[in-house]
Amino acid sequence: MLRVAVLFSLSAALGWVQPTDSSRPAASNVRDAEYPRIHDDLRITFRVKAPGARKVQIDPGGEGSGLGPGPFDMARDADGVWTVTTPPAVPGFHYYFLLLDGTRVSDPSSDTYFGYGKQVSGIEVPEKGTDFYDAKNVPHGEVRACWYNSRTTGQLRRAFVYTPHGYELNPKARYPVLYLQHGMGEDETGWGKQGRANFILDNLIAAGKAKPMIAVMDCGYAARAGEAPVSLEGGTARIVEGLHRITEVFEDVLLGDLIPAIDARYRTLPGREHRAMAGLSMGGLQTYQIALTHLDKFAYIGAFSAPVLWGNNFDPKSLFGGVFSDAATFNQKVRLLWLGAGTAEKGFYPGIRQFHETLDKLGIRNMFFESAGTAHEWQTWRRDLHDFAPRLFRD
Image (cartoon, rainbow, N blue to C red; front, side, top):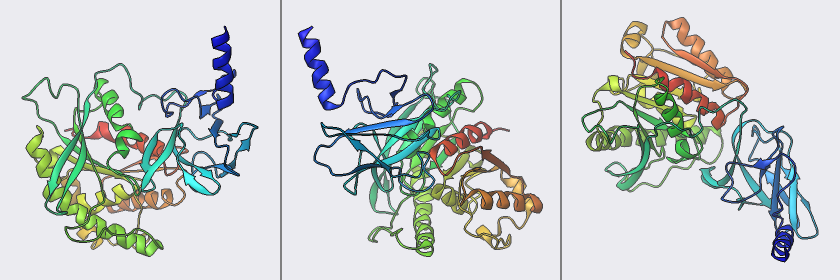
């Protein structure tokens, strides 16, 4: 009994006492961490021990975060443990920071994810009745790192490759390929960690809702050999210019380096009818630029929350090389043009919906998917992939 009492006192001193309410540790916590904790109404209690700090806050990272506008001021107790409970959060995955006396740092109790161009904290807020991206008791595929030499960049690059269950068991089987791209500030780890793409595909394939496929997730940032990386800092015009320059290089990486490497190392089905490209936000913009101008390489195209940079200046004779100028030819070549957006994406949803309606008027066959109530965030893109993947590689 003495040992138990001593351990309880030590835990209390360190701020580790487990609450007696119905809250539970977030699934995104590091092993054995009791905080952050999620309540039944999706309020979140954060706690951190920082006795030397003068002010500690939870910073959701910007406007539109599913955690709320923030920052949220934390209260300090006598032992230097800081605590705050936020309003109910939007279900899904959300980045956040700790602000220690104004400096952004990661929460040592949460796992970190590559976003904002760095490793940052993230929290998984469950959505009631939703499990399509959970790890279930179904046959699982594998995700492996594929290192390949890029002549375009003069560097060794890493992509993550998902192979479906059964890939190793049947050495004669060949598979179609989905090239799946991340958003700005993220990298090739995004779809696996934040997006849970492998579990989404596992569950769909196990249920017979999607064709078994290979998915390739590469880094969308690239610079030519001998050239400095392109900066995406500054105003909107400079960011847009930078995105176009990065995409031009990544186009050469994808077509000249990555696809040949994947086709050489994995049992892929050759030809455009067995190849798809999709991406979120920046990755969606890259998908537009690359796939729509290379219909000899891709028959399935998905743009998840892709910015419509041309706005109202839509010219089917010039946009993406005039690919939309002949609806009959386009519809014959493209098996699927899929557009998606969250209804709460203030800066994206209106333009994407208008683009869809414009394509309809031109007779361009396309699909538009709305993620109800979600903003520019991973819950939107998980839902996008869940709807998009079952439509791929169908006759």
